[in-house]
Length: 130
Image 1 (cartoon, rainbow, N blue to C red):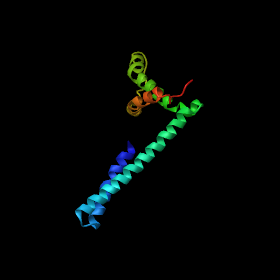
Image 2 (cartoon, rainbow, N blue to C red; image 1 turned 60 degrees about the vertical axis):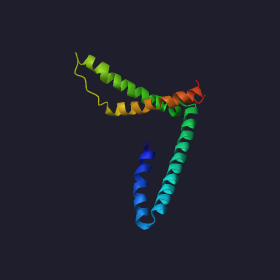
Image 3 (cartoon, rainbow, N blue to C red; image 1 turned 45 degrees about the horizontal axis):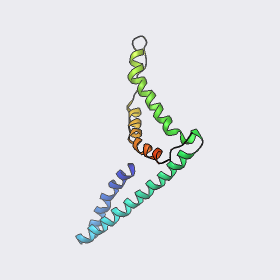
Image 4 (cartoon, rainbow, N blue to C red; image 1 turned 90 degrees about the vertical axis):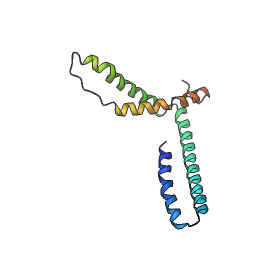
């Protein structure tokens, strides 16, 4: 998760600053651990807030609010299907443009990685019923 990467990139410089101003190694370790723990708690609270927003979005009756994730998934699938199946087939007879699938595959892989979480939500009744 991006917040974990950001968290790890900030803890190192903060630990370096602590080591410049605090001479005692035990105190340095204690302060670095405290900063790390506070930052981890903050990230955890941010993630909890995002989960609540996701629940509210998923329960929304409008397809334009709750259906954006499936729409992105379907667009990625159609783009990859065009690139892997339809484009080479049509290229036999026509000059068809190639599609850069690097972004599509990145988005789709991220969504598929979250697939287990979505199945867990559906199993627990969080999924939207039509």
